[in-house]
Image 1 (spheres, rainbow, N blue to C red):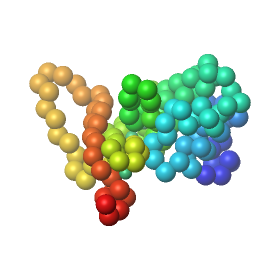
Image 2 (cartoon, rainbow, N blue to C red):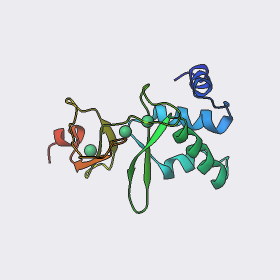
Image 3 (cartoon, rainbow, N blue to C red):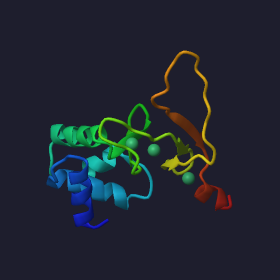
Image 4 (tube, rainbow, N blue to C red):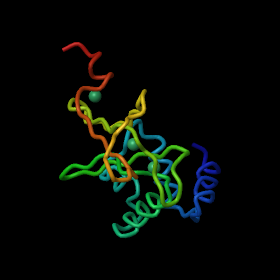
Length: 141
Ligand SMILES: [Zn+2]
Ligand SMILES: [Zn+2]
Ligand SMILES: [Zn+2]
């Protein structure tokens, strides 16, 4: 993604285009799947932990990225679709973790999931799945 596009994206989501935000988004865009926090730390070694934490928080809050997967030692982040807005996320897809290569992917659902929860209002959905991804399945053992 071009730097100008990222700057635009930040502005339309009400954020200033700081170097750490630009760097983080461009790294995430180049990464083939949801990016682990440890990778972000490596790429953004020029900022301290607190700044990195706040950078992520701001991007999540403004609907640019979302937490895709969480494990004891790692958190994965993914870029949001266009339909996420400041204050509201609509990432109603499956987060799939491959047990072989460890990649976490956002998988769009072919059909809308219908969930009835009597008396409750659904505001978000977080579906986690694990298995073997299509790339790993193709490799003969
Ligand atoms: Zn989102
Ligand atoms: Zn895999
Ligand atoms: Zn996702």
